[in-house]
Length: 240
Image (cartoon, rainbow, N blue to C red; front, side, top):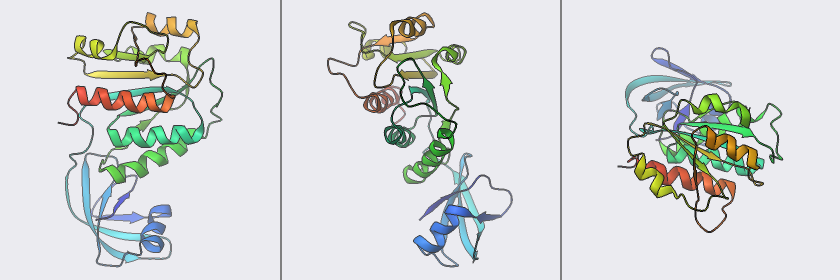
């Protein structure tokens, strides 16, 4: 059953417009009477029947709804320095599939790819597309890009902050997880291709980030964020 995303469901009728309408009408060419699933960012899946296919919109009738079982159970936020656009899109796509709850891009000293105010719209579209594939009804929340120095207040809300630090030599991820098995609100911090300067490392560690090594190999930023997300969510039984 094909899935479509809308911004909200109010009542028993749903109107698809824009890209979602075009996909239904002109790409997969569904017909009146066909059954589809709609998600809108709440906790439910809405099962609908196509009632009308017009030039610029499709009208659906809600037949039933059920609680979505694929939404994340673990609250994980990824703070990630801006990287090349295609790689950032890949990260958002895969973190949505894996079950990350929130994504916060930031600019640091060695960030080359700056945010000109257009990234949040593009990344929101990617997570909306990805949730239809993976079965979630709630997209990963994409926050506006911040400066690294402005993240300090945000970090206070987390009871476990894991900082992927390529200069770390001793503290490993497994030990930190075992010491924080009861954490409820978890964050990961991943830098850009150029890493962090020492003052930034000190800032994060002084604000309770747990500096960890990810092993003897230096990973690409997108690899590190995807790997960390999968390991941490598995440790906290997201996939059980």
